Amino acid sequence: MPFNWPRLRGREISSGGLILAVAVFIAIVANGRFYSAALSALGSSPWLWPFHLSLFCSLVALLVLILSAVCHRALVKPVLIAFLLISAVVSYFAIAYGTVVDEEMIANALQTDGAEAGDLVSPTMLTWIGLVGVLPAFAVWRAKLFFPDWRTETVSRLKLAGAALAVLAGSVVAFSGHYAGLLRFHGEVTNEAVPTYALLSAIRLAAKSAPKSKHQHIELGTDAALPPGDRDHELIIMVVGETLRADHFGLNGYARDTTPQLRSRNVVNFPDFWSCGTATAISVPCMFSNLGRAKFNTTTAATLDNALDVLARAGVSVLWRDNNSSSKGVADRVTYQDFRKPPLNPMCEDGECRDEGMLAGLQDWINAQQGDMLIVLHQMGNHGPAYYKRYPKAFEKFTPICSTSDLGSCTAEELNNTYDNAVLYTDHFLSKVIDLLRANDHNYETAMFYVSDHGESLGEHGLYLHGAPYVFAPDTQKHVPAVMWLGQGIKEDVVMSSVADRSRRPWSHDNVFSTLLGFFEVTTVAYDPKLDILERTHVETSFQN
Ligand SMILES: [Zn+2]
Image 1 (cartoon, rainbow, N blue to C red):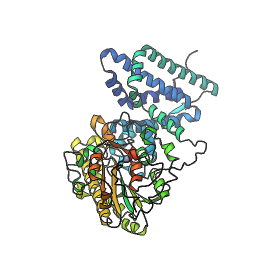
Image 2 (tube, protein in one colour):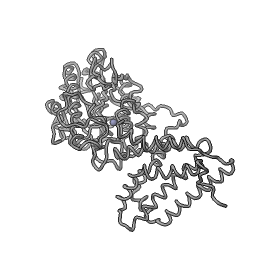
Image 3 (cartoon, rainbow, N blue to C red):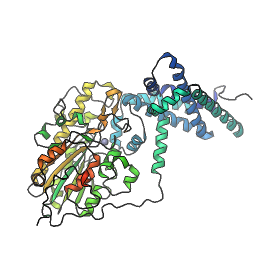
Image 4 (spheres, rainbow, N blue to C red):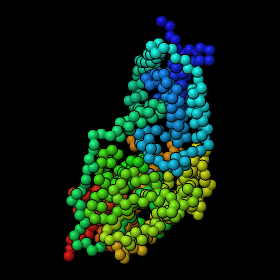
């Protein structure tokens, strides 16, 4: 029986023909990074060329198989158009920033606001998506499809899928050794295939976040209590940083002094601090949870109390001010204030609100509380790719800068200059936080704890931004700056030489939960002294009467 696909009848095309055309187009145009990843993983010697060619055939066959399964009748055009647009977006991120669209990145994208998304838009992005996505999608929309009767259509689709399966099986059998090696030792290469890996990640994410049999919220540290008879109330400010990498932090020995103001305020620096994730959506809930990186996942964390919940239950007044995208669920049960727009944030211009604006009216809030306080300030920090928007002009010390989101069009020097100017602004912001605490030091035991949520890639090995899968992510995305500033009252409670010694040890977001509880000397089974960065440096004074 002869195939009746793909076939053109006059200017009409069969749906099978259209599926094949779209699969070939995506395999050729959107998958440059996939082939180059395979070439660098396995080598490019001439005797491997047939294998690399087979990769192309396998990818086309795989795309045809997927499309055959979901394209039928009225669904053909919408599915193909969606496939083309998704492929264009995913391949743009792969080419422009070297990023792989995985579960973390999709989760992060879903929680991104308009301003963050707007930062990513550049002429190059619009051109790429226009040429690789919109234009072919328009051609698909205009194509004249002919549909034979239902039965013939189904048989023809089964033949198409069968042929694709045969090509895929043939390729794998013919080069079984190479495919086994690729999957076993270079599995990350398959993550570059567009759009299959992004689709797989989206399905996995949807499966994870599908409502399960009603999960009860689990309370933690229900025994949490503040030390009895404690006359000195704590005022602690935790600053959650954004996208600042450790090696661009002056206090960590960076060639440029990007932290002159912090240096003059005698902070305790933690040069060996590591993040829980490589994206805000993971790191922020992770650092406040007591799960630790090994056990952390966003679904479990969302059903569990975090450090803020435990402290609030013990009687601490907790306030979260946000100039980022959100608290990622961490502040759902405490006071939350959105500082991403005026008038709450008085320091906004051209749609960009400054981190310093989060300090507006903060003294009034402090004055209105009684007892212990924890204030969390969630920064915009060094959020990319529009680093040039992240600081006022007065902080443009390093020039020339990269004044576009199209990072690939800037030199490494411009990129580093722009990023470092934003670090200077964070240095300034943190110093203002310290000054506010200093002004309150006679009434409270004060401290600031700053840690960034994750680092950033600045073009090394063709990688930009962050969000790489943790095991493959370069250290620049995971090694983060962290500092503490301790007021006089807390300094009298701890042995400073011991703090200095402990600051040089390796720490991570896993230590934030118990360190926060430790500041308030909260007693609860949820507190693990071994994880408290300041543990054993406390002088036993709290139970003396
Ligand atoms: Zn982040």
